[in-house]
Image (tube, rainbow, N blue to C red; front, top):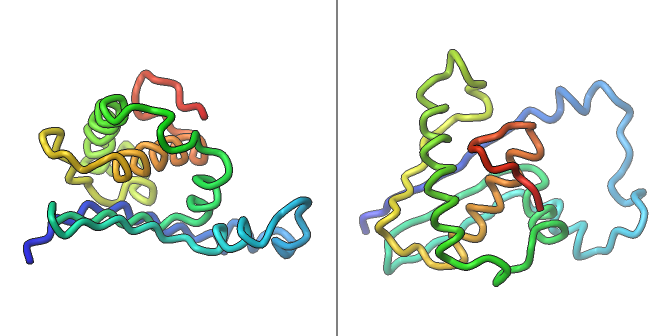
Length: 150
């Protein structure tokens, strides 16, 4: 099976950052449910479709929790809106990957093979768009002229 892999693999060495602080167990946070705790612990989002032969893998600590708790719900945006924004974000992302001397290569590790002529479906576009929003808000980056907000 020919597989086009669109991968966002951003493994951050959070241990270096967290290691400087005293750590508190996640259970000590107020009003956190078991469902939210499970989502926070699951740091990998994989979306695959054998018919279209694609796979997106997002490995990002906290993204699942953010997607479940802060992102706009599915159906809020139209698929056309998501496709347009994703195309713009992917173009800028890929340009930054190719310029490691200018942009942090730990943030922009791999290019994304996202082709605007392919219908990836709503779920893929929704999760990819929200990853870009999460990424920009978390790492204080701005990929386009659009201010990232939720």
